[in-house]
Structure formats: structure tokens, C-alpha cells
Length: 270
Image 1 (cartoon, rainbow, N blue to C red):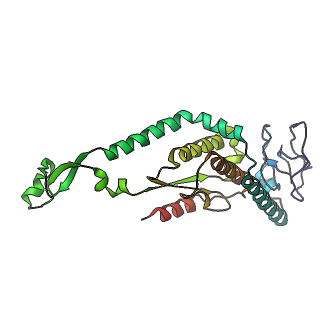
Image 2 (cartoon, rainbow, N blue to C red):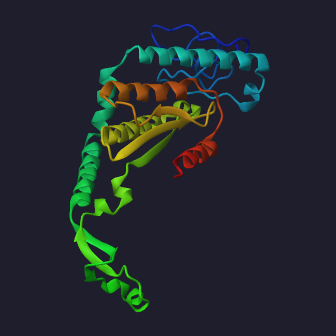
Image 3 (cartoon, rainbow, N blue to C red):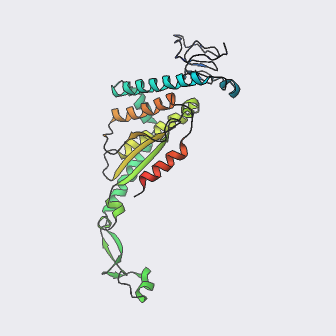
């Protein structure tokens, strides 16, 4: 069957047989009405590990506005249900550990760098633009001009550097659009999850940084995933990752990349 009618999840195939076209099976490709990939009129994306057959844009355009509206409603309902399940604690620890293992060395390297940054902050260094101390040879022109802050002395930079003294806002904006799921077979979604987990693991509990993680897709330019007051234990990190995956699967097609950047920049401004 090629004519699109009413969106639905579709039947589950216990044998996970590849299905191309038609409008019966969930997880098929190139079909109509059911959850899958490469087709039209389905409520959301669903990947079962098979090759993807893509229908033409002309065929997609034949889906009625009523069917599109109903598909969007079903996607929103499915997303709300999925997020509710995550909050209830149905977590896959093997999934979390498999993602973390792939970035274990990166996490160690970044934590080592952040630790060195803390050490450098605590070391006594040359403080410039002082009104007493040794004459700063780099400010001889200012000496001739009669400036007073032409000296340097050894001291703790944390007492004079507000950048190092005050918490630094880190804002990570991630792409959780439909294409991340649709083309997930090339590894882009997995790499996004790995990078996000690495950032959460490295900055959690570090009072020097305020970590914000937001997402964007066709439904919204700003989806909150992480804010500074959250306790980023393993369970919370896993919920964040699974929530990101859920948004890529159930969001409506569209693009808010520019708007997401503008919102992030505006909110990060002092």
C-alpha cells in the first residue's frame, strides 16, 4: 500500500524482519502511516537496524494536513510518555556504562587539565599593573607618561582575577533534531551522547563552573537538559542522555539552530 491515511505505531514484528513499504509494521522503511524511517505520515521515527529505503518528497507532500496534525499529536504524546518513564527510573545501566567506556580516557584527560588549572590558579604568579613592587619593564612607556600602576609583584592571582575567582558559565547547546535520529546509523547521535556525557562527568560537582546543557530541534529552540543546581550522579546523567534520544525520535521535523544560538548567547551575556 502506498496511500497515506491515518498515523499509528504499527504492529511489532517478533522476528524483526525487514519491512519495506506498506503501512502495517512498526520499524519499517519507505512505508506510510507507521513509526519507522524513510516513509511518510508516521507519528515518529523508529529504527530497527535495517537498511533505510527513502520515498520521494513528492510522495511525502501527498500526506493530508489532518494526518500531519494527528501524527504530531501522537509524537507529542509518545514523547511525554517516554520522558515520564525515564523519571520513574527505568534505566539501562549497561547502556550508560557502554557510552562512558568509550570516553573514559577523554574524561581522565579533561579532569587532569581542570586539576592543573586549579593548581595554576593557586600558584603565586607575577601580578602586573600594581602600584608597588618591582618596576615592570613592559610598562616603561607608562612610566614616562606618569602612570602609577607600573609595578609588578608576586602574589595569588585569585585575589585579583575575577575570571578565576567567580564561577564560569559553561553553556553546551546540543542538536536533538530529527536528523540526528534519522541518520543515526552514521554514529552522529552516539558521538553526541558521548561528548555530552564527558562534559557532565568532568564538570559535575566543580564549584568553579556553572554547567548548562540545552537542546534544539524542530519543536523548540531551547530544551533544558542540565542546569547548575542539578546533582549529576550516574542516574541523572543517564536520564539526560535518554531524554536527548527521546527528543530526536519524537520531535517534529524542522530547524531552530540559529534561534538556539541566539538564545544561548543572549542568556550567557553578563
